Image (cartoon, helix red, strand yellow):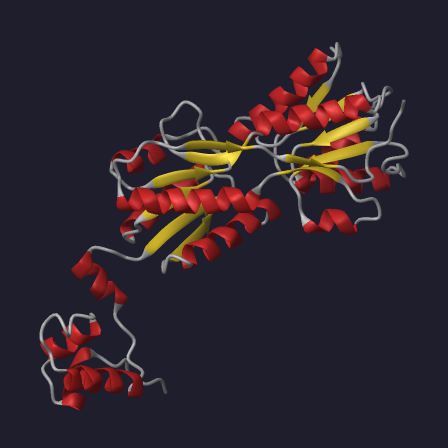
Amino acid sequence: MSKPKVSITDLAEKTGLSTTTVSRVLAGKGEQCRISKASRQKVLDAAKEMNYVPNLYAANLRTGKSKTVALIVPSLSNPFFASIASGVNAEIRKYGYITIITDSDENPENEKQELEQLQARNIEGLIIAPCGSNWKHIQNVYDMQLPVICIDRYFEELDIPYVSTDNYDGAFRATKYLLSNGHTSIACIQGIRDSTPNRLRVKGFMEALQEAGVTQYYIAGDDFTIQNGFLETKLLMQQKAKPTAILALSNTIAMGCMKALKEENLRIPEDVSLITFDKHPYLDYLSTPLSCVAQPVNEIIQIAVKFLFLRMENKDMPVTKVLLKPKIIIKDSVKALL
């Protein structure tokens, strides 16, 4: 049978002090309210002995602060967003706050409902990687003075702060690397088509090819999933003119590509070269380590969290929009055709 929760009244009875005195000591206001050192110590000793746990909900009502921020990501099953969630949680903990982490499952309606529920929990700030192109619910909470910052995904047309990667630059340089190795028949397997990172990656891919005078290219896919990478690679390998290289716009897509190529008895890079967006530890442990566009995830997290807390302190501070340069990491997955 569980023990009943210890209350301030219980502590008052234990110490022989008033509930007001106990409450002030527990709130850290004992010295300010001229409560004697002996009485303050008596309250603290009793609280420790009786395993008193503060009622944070009641404290929230008194102070208007919940010491809580929220993080909404599109998918915790995606290693990239799982890594962001872990990093954000660790960084926010340094500020003495806790993080409520939710997963919209790439569904705008889920995202909208979760945001409404989080507001009801009196969160003090929000970090969000939005899914889809629907932004009105995010703009609404931002207009209501809730500190908000977008991470990874964002809306170029809105005046809402964000921290992300220069996705255009990453895809442009990855494609240039394939071209420099003699590949001109390159396929791009993309993710969520209307997400800002995807659109900019596709743009970087196309413009790198166009700059090199390559006008024929193949872009397919519609999701940042293993299944999308698998199906699209399967279809690619049925074509008469098979691509010599694939640019996968996420490491989950790349995993699907590898599975499909293995089923087709095609080797990386001997038969098909592969380069992916996103750095993940598993890439180095594959039989053929994958070249990748590594996003500066740790820096993105640190900057986003710092800006969020600065905005929580000063809601009138200027809107900050930051794009960090990714790094191309060369491994063994691209064959030189020259």
